[in-house]
Length: 313
Image (cartoon, rainbow, N blue to C red; front, top):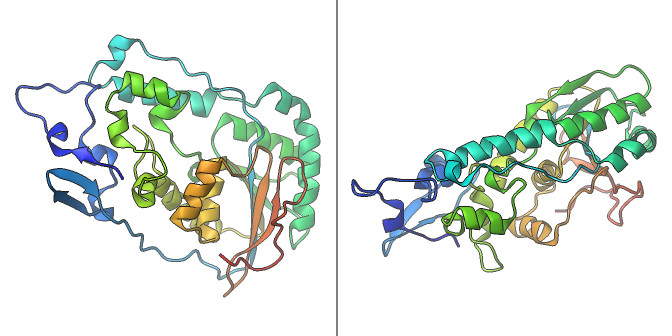
């Protein structure tokens, strides 16, 4: 459970804040309208969060595939000098640098670029055979360099000059300070980090999934964005392919397959997810629960959980 000392979150006139101090409470916890803050024994903790949102529309028949980009190159993020990080705005500047590197600089791994054409041909065949209509109508991709490159391999392999569009809602979960940094590096540079997020088996799933990394998004934030993306995609027609990221696909699966918080934490702890070059697809039909029709790994083989049956979660 996330526990923060109230006295450590309160500043006074004799103390000036720096980036090494913990951010103000409402900058690291979900907004008040989604949370219930309780004051008990001079401790502040986050109460139960519930989401009241409409189910994704199933008024029209449609198939959507979510493809994870190919293997990416190792993360290389420049660290700002210590004197920058010690400034009140230092950690936010580092977050901005991390975001730029993640979106614009991180390309596909050289090995993935060499095998990308072969992957595109095999994936195109599998997608077309799994699609009820037998063809792909549109491709959307996350506005990141590695997803753009993956999309090009797939587009070339598919017949016709398919339209491709960037959709910002498909972007990866914003890791904030954690992008390109190890836990130890963040803890060493920012002593307040451990006060923000408690990791371990005893953590409260609701709190763990609701608290973002410094300067980033929580899994709850990602779930809300995934729901919005599904609503946008459901207004389109035909069979759609979305080239996106592991974290986003996990949020989509949690949304459509009705995963519990415990199941989400289990997948995170085990490192389970759609691997690079993998795909999961869903068929939407009027009045019916979305049905998973395809789940394949990077070796292009159906997983043991291949489902032609309606989801049972």
